[in-house]
Amino acid sequence: MAKQRRGRQPFTSGRLSGRSARHRQLRVGEELRHALSEILREGECRDPVLDNASITVTEVRVSPDLRNATAFVMPLAGANTSEILAALNRRAPSLKGLLARRASLRYTPNLTLALDGSFDAAERISAVLARPEVARDLQPQADCREEPHRGD
Image 1 (tube, rainbow, N blue to C red):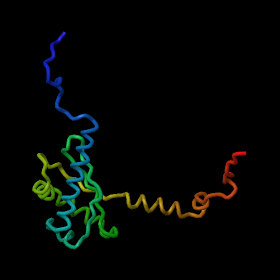
Image 2 (tube, rainbow, N blue to C red):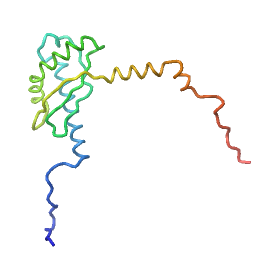
Image 3 (cartoon, rainbow, N blue to C red):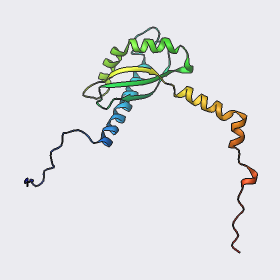
Image 4 (cartoon, rainbow, N blue to C red):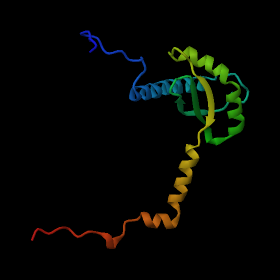
């Protein structure tokens, strides 16, 4: 039987548990989202397409090893999405450098920018809910009401 020393924890590989690793991914993603939105708001990314563009950074997903990140963006009113997304991906290496100066991370992840589809999905769901046959099903029906329980 191996002798265990008092006051010391058993040896582990140094990796975080699943829950704390996921928590770290979320914290790093939020820090990158704030820094990236600040960079885009201040116009530090010098590109003629991005000069007057108002871009929302909705989410940044970070890989479990924190080496890659995907930033989901949406231009204001969805205007010029293809040109803006192409310009952002063209400027991704310089954005990574700007992020490295702003975010307090040991390693700045490689950045990929993608169009956020959640706005389109929300619009489709709203359209489905607004259809008459669906709206009818969502209304409470009068004959399904329960009568109050009498204590007789």
